[in-house]
Length: 138
Length: 138
Length: 138
Image (cartoon, rainbow over all chains, first blue to last red; front, side, top):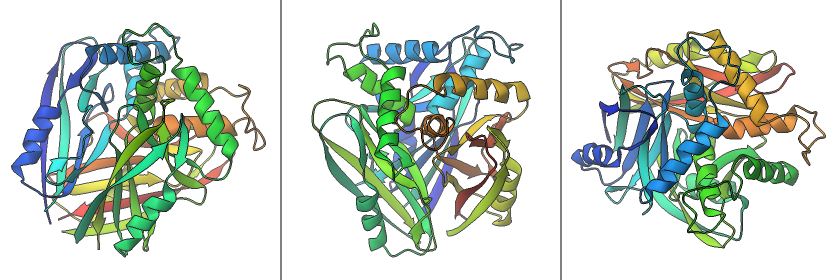
């Protein structure tokens, strides 16, 4: 068995779900493993990772609006000195999580037909976000 | 070190938490590893995975009712053409997540005494759900 | 490639986020791997794991208050015989999750500058909590 790792960087421009499946799958394919395990890790506390529908932009919009309802701005947070969207961003990152693990089966990521990998940006300002990838397999 | 992978399929009949610990542990035991790492990955966007209490059915019912409150039907979703329970199902999958990693210690999954692995079905209609498993160890 | 595993125990004294980064990083460093994958698994159903800001105690307080709002006590739960904070604790564990995977890149955990690993205790009474760790790498 062998392993590979890298850090991919993505530019975001406001809150939303950014598709990263293509970049991730491309890096994974370079190893040409028949079987293995891919792990993704978002190195931030106001951005996160999620796997959701890759077909309908409306689903992504609804997810964003729902996160806004569950973690609204101006809810009397003690931590408010980094802007009104900062503490809600931390909460959304707690809810969605920063690590994902996806098996590689038959030479391909075991994503379902409708699943895409998304980098979830929770801040309004543009950011550069890093996602660490680790692949073990053969 | 060696690795194994498979895809298990489960039939669901309505929303709820379906226990899959037995099937997962049985497949894991076939490798007879003393130590290792098991990863589970749900290949869907309206079903997910969670680890929770394996003893009280009331806990599972309360979790279902709570998910219904956090992601209610008819909340003005833009994506509504696949039925009223579809968008709430996506949101519940975001909240609970689709991947789990469980170490194998001393030849057994490191699940606590009260922990069970559950496939969380979020749609009302019966579905066939696939969970990809990957095991690495020795 | 090699693997190591252990179980770390932590004492908690009431609900809150307990930093465990130092203990986890110390155990990880003993293997002296240049590259690898660390997995953490919380063996409980009323405690969990999350990665969040390591700098501001106010962020941690806000997260605790937010979890209390999303999973309040006395919300008509069917499962109420283990105390008013028990069912909310299960719900908070579902929301935050019990497993985390962190790549090891360049000999160090790929945590971002502001990221810390926290054991999230959701019960009021003191508890002894176990976190299983698995490390694979070289």
